[in-house]
Length: 306
Length: 306
Image (cartoon, rainbow over all chains, first blue to last red; front, side, top):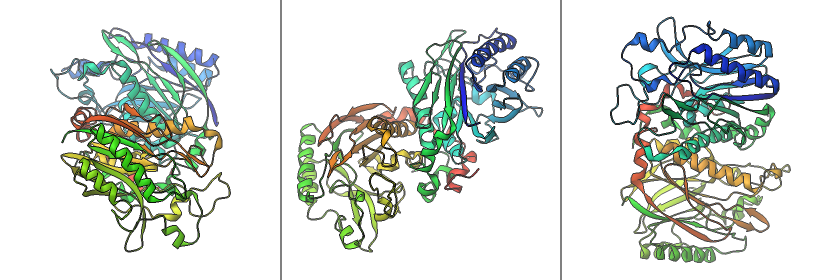
């Protein structure tokens, strides 16, 4: 399938006390809306099943683990998989993954239109910090609760379209997009939980935060000639505001659909995958134009070296 | 010096028949304006001394070589260097360079405020094609007349500020920005000659072309927490339109100055280099957040591989 009707299924706030079952009910409601609009694929946010728990400092690992899923699908999410299969809609969403080996990842999965998981991604660029930080307005403890993803940026053939995933902070790193671009990616899906306030610079403001998110996604789409879908968990979670601004972006880097609220909200776009070809064959024909002999620092050093 | 008043000195059209002396006269007029506004640094476009000659198909190498400079400064440009030294203004501009060994590069240089050349860059990402292309609305023969730059993306300490350069099409490649970002760059200067029309897609339109240029520069600045100055040669050269849209961009990716015409035009901004620090120390602290183990494709392969 080369022409996909895609839904960006933004979720509003999920409070600490909300059950996974309640959230899955909201996700199914959005899925039904998507079916009515003819969607073939619906993308949900990062950590879609729970509140953004990395804002809470926890020392008890058993408590931490209550925020994680030990299998997927599981009892709470099975109804979502079932409904998606009924509608013949592929889905992608994020969740906290606890592996049988006891490893913790910030993960997202992709299904085909028959409800089979055909792709998994584990977040590579974890923002934030490990220990309680008294300098911040609030905590962002992703580096405490997750280890960096070990799967890299794979792409997956889903009914003749090449799809990839990344999560939240990954979108700000051009390396994320390029590694998928170098596989010929045609659709990048990502979810995010982005505080409306910079915990280290209160003056930054919502408008600037939205701009930076959109700038990163539109540049990544344009420079790799790929469709992109970026989906927020938004709204005020137990007093902490998350921004919205979910977008669907075409392979020219233009926003073609955008949410307007900070609540549960679906926006859709018809995405012709063949529109990726012009960019990939002309200005971003990597084989003709890239000069890897001058890119060495990108892989040979991590931090700044003069 | 950590606070620079920077001028983006856009040039309007240069016709095929215009002499270098006439163009240098226009560049000096902009320099005098810049001095009156207190500028410490003025950035001019790519191939600032001549028309954008790669639009013309030539088979006679002697004719091609008439568009190149064999030394810098030379008789035509010495008055610009002299005036810059008088004003104590550092300058950067682009020109076609023919080396003593007979090599051809699309080059830009940077001087200090005493008129000494302290940095040189040779364009790495050459767009266009080698042979006459009957499919295009007009020719873009950079791959015919230049070889790819051999100097990489170096940075230069200019009075306690770390400066780098790239040229035109380089700005669309995130690798360009990242290689300089990994050296801690604080100011990226670039000139461009960008046709207002896509020679392979007439429907694209000026607005889209301006958007793509600005998107690339603002994303590069934001994602590397660096100032950026992007300067056009604009206007209609012998019937062929070049876009304007010269901008100065802050390390948050926001445009702080922008030209409004397609003619000779100076815009300025006061650029505090210490404003790069917040981004470099937080969200884009490369040492803490980059995961080079997943970036391998960026340097190990040139084109797309599934």
